[in-house]
Image 1 (cartoon, helix red, strand yellow):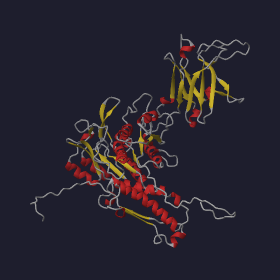
Image 2: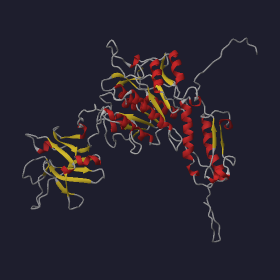
Image 3: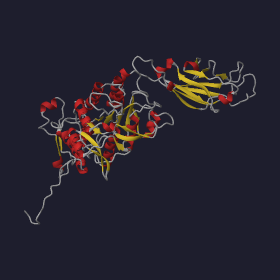
Length: 579
C-alpha cells in the first residue's frame, strides 16, 4: 500500500494491488429438507436446521441406533433424503418437525418414552433408567459417562480395600461443558457399606475443589429396578456414554402449520432454512403426508406452498437464488383429501391419479413462479421396514439430479434426459400425448421409455408460460442466480473504495474475467465473448449525482444457453442438384 508521508531519505519499496480480483463461483448445490424423522440424536434438535453430508450422518442424527432411519408411520422425508444422496446430492440441511405424527386436538399429550434412557448391565439385566430432571429440561440434554472406579480408601488403615469390580463412577456433562463427577458408586444396597456409595441414596461429592456439594438426583431422575438373588457386580451399569434428552415436544394437529412455517428470528422450521445462505434448493415432502393424513387442509397446504415460493423469491438484499421443488398431492380432485377407498370400497392408489388431476391441482394452487418447479408422477421405492414397494414424492430424487448435473456438466445444463437412481417404477406411465398437456404448463414429467428406461423428461420452472418465457427453464433460472450471487459475493471488496475511474476499470475487469470463464465453459451463447456478454461501468452510468449518493453502477448483460427442448429435423427429398 502506498504511503502518504515520507520523512527520511532513502529508497522505499511498496507493493500495490492494481489488478482485478477473481470471482469464485458460489455453490448452488446445497439442499434444505423439512419433514418427520425417526429420531433426534446427537447435536440435532427439533425444528432447527442440521447440516448432513451423507446418509450415514443422517442416520447418526435422525435414525434410532442400529435402525434404517425410516419411520413406522411412513414419513416421506427419509425417502427424499436418501434419494438426494443416491442421485448425486452432497451437503444438505435437515429440519425435523417431529418423530411422530401430531396428536388429535383435545387428546391427552402422549408420554415421550424416548426421553428415558435404559442402561444395560454386563449381565443383560436392566439395573436403572435415567431421565432428565424437570428443572434441567430447559437447559438441553446431558451426557452421562459411566466408567470403572474403585472402593473408597480407608482413612484408618493403610490396607487397600478389596476391589470386587462392582464400583463405578458417573460423570455428568452439562450443556455448559462443566462435568460433575460422582465416584465410588455401587449397586449394593447394604446400609453399612463403607466401601462405596449406594446409588439409591443421595450421592454427593465436592466438585472442582469447591466446598459445595451437588446431588446426582438434582441432575437426573434415577429409576432403579429391584434385583433379587444377584450380586452387585452382575447388575452394575455397563460402561458407556449415554445421552439424557429432555422430553420431546409433542404437539396437536392444529400446531403443525405453525411448526412447518417456523420463525426467522429463532431459525426454526421453513423460515430457518431460508436464513441459511448455503441452501439453494428446498423441499418439504411430508406436506404430502400431512395432507394424506388430514392433518392440514387443502387451504393450509396451498398457503404453506405459497410461503415456500415467496421465501425463494424474497432474498433481499441479496439477489434471489433459492428454488423450491413442489410435489403434487395424490388426490383425485384438487380440493378434496386423498381417499383410501372409492365408491365400490376399492383402495385408491396413486396410479389412478391422472395427468388431468395434476393439471387441475396446479390450477387450484394458482401460483406461478420462476423460482419453483414441479415434477410428476410419484416414484416407486422400497420401504426398508417391510421390503414392500411404496410410492413417494419425487422432490428429493430430482434435487439430487440437479446437484449431479452441476457436478458433471455444469449449472447451465438442463437437469433432464437423466436416469433417476434408486427407483423401481412410476405411479403413472405418462405418454407423449399426456405430456403435451402437462409440459406447456410447467409440469415436468418422469417417463418410462421403451429400450431407454426411466428418464426425467422435463426441465421447466413454474414461470408464467405466456408472460414470463425468459425464465421458462430451470437451468436458465439457476445459471442467472449463480451469476448474480457470485458477482455479489465476489465484489464485496469494492465497497467503500474511492469511486473513480480506477475502481470502474478494476470492477469491470473482475466481472469480465468471471463471465469470460463461464463463456469458455459453454454456459453463455455466442461465437465470441463479445456476443456472449457485456460489462459496462463508465462515466455515462456513474454520473456526478449518483456518485454523490455513494453509488457505483455496473451494467451487465449475458446471453445464457437454453436447452434444446425440441429437436426438429426438417427432411425432404433432394434431386442431388443445388436449388
